[in-house]
Image 1 (tube, rainbow, N blue to C red):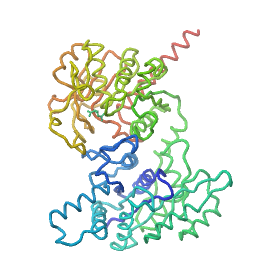
Image 2 (cartoon, rainbow, N blue to C red):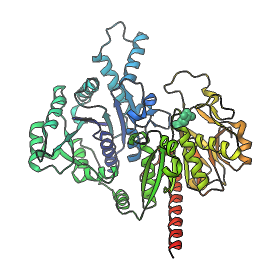
Image 3 (cartoon, rainbow, N blue to C red):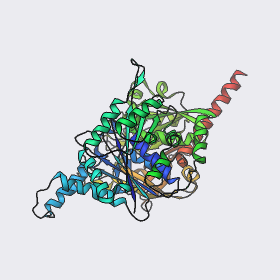
Image 4 (cartoon, rainbow, N blue to C red):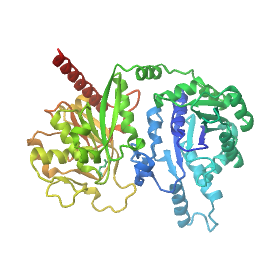
Length: 544
Ligand code: GLN
């Protein structure tokens, strides 16, 4: 029988519940236990697929095509937990399912209510992940204790312990212990209040993880323990990390979290092996060099919109013992100021995925600049579509070539709607989604990076390369480096007479891990390092 850990949060949002849940998963896995992770989100959207990444952060895509919350990206980067459709539920999905059952007459005329019907549905999704092979199911509850929206979830996880036995459940509550400059001290009251909210609904947390800027003095930990009704050793400090999120598991271990969980849930666990992870942190702390990459996006000012891209660049940096300095460039700034002013000085240019025409011309100019200047270029999804439009306009000479997403009347629709998309009107969950196989051209840079001619990568798009133009691209020097569906869909393009120019229709950033950088990100950052080396060598020669 699987044991269950519930991770809730209090005081404020953005405390890092996702990271903490992922870290707990990782530590238990590394103690020889099999874990599954799941996130329950209290908002009413059925999934985050239609939500604005500026507000909500990136939409993370799973192999099975589920569009999920970005926290699932942390789960995949930290653990081997198999994530599927059952790994992310929202209030919208729960209600949709209950209402569909009601329409089918499954409730036999009863009044359908939050308790028990909605809470039963929630408990059902908790049970879905539990099986004989899984030692621990970790469920993160989105939102903050006390929110109206999260009440049914809190009620369901309370009832759950009653159903399967408290000894099989563990409640971890993440709170904030803020430092008040004026008073010169840390404050425990918000934590007390937030635990109070949980206890009101009948949940007594077993472990408190306290996010803090400063070390929490023993007296304050004692105070938290007493007022929140938890033993002192269950008040775990999680101090802000200046360097990297990958330090979080190490600090939780230092504060005894893994041992505490193993003890409280009575798990049979191995001793912890973190050698490779410590090595990773060592490389992070001691980079041999710094390399700079410009990420040209629509939402450059917003960190979470390109979360997996930034993480993947960091992983590649760690592999090359380098720190990757990321320049967050707004494509509209390139439109106003030109690519020379915005992009000169960078060792690589990356154009990530996106939707809508705002800033598109800036992205296309960024590709042109990288192509002409021989700067390593990596295009991802929309980035490929921009690279194709740029090449069409400026190399082949097809004036005003564009994607029909941005100009329906373009004389040269080099990117157009996928056939399967033409009749679709609903926006939610209707793109080409999830893992799809791709055959690589054996002589391509991509095949060299992957070290294989056959790959599977995750997709999320509606538009594709227009095959009517394929010959013109190839005869003008663009290599179709990867295709799927028996050669019918173009998935990767390259420019062979350029130091490193690769654009892909899929999202490699969803499969990179800190311990195994994605081969294309590793290749891209490697080539940016080479460019930097040759530039500094040239500068030295000029000085001599
Ligand atoms: N908007 C483009 C499409 O739908 C690109 C999507 C993306 O970058 N994820 O095809």
